[in-house]
Image (cartoon, rainbow, N blue to C red; front, side):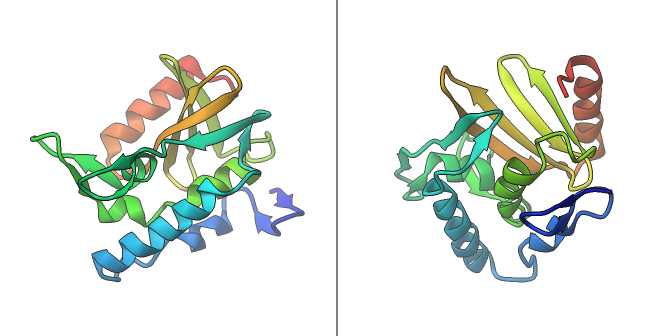
Length: 168
């Protein structure tokens, strides 16, 4: 097991970051507000890096929701009519993004698997069942999306890609 000295968090097989998941019994509007507050703090965080390059977010506003596209890609899914609908399950995990990027991607946590999927870099935390997708730009990474793996078939797809295309 590893202990991150800066955050005092257990980093292996008993990840204390699980405790940062939002309370799923709260009303959807409360979860939208709480997850959006977490996202806004990440937007202003100048210390969010992956492999030495800054992680940025899509900041263009979606007119339907009046929120940044980066936020919507994390907490919503498109329906059959291509409209974005909030997904309560996705909102619960928003705080994991910053914690994983800041504390778990330096090789100390053996629950983190990093792989390429076409042009994107995918960071999969097996312990938290969470996937972060970054688009590699010249001097930075753009956070495309992040979401919990709640379906077995998706988890198996990700684990297969880790085995085929893993880079860490």
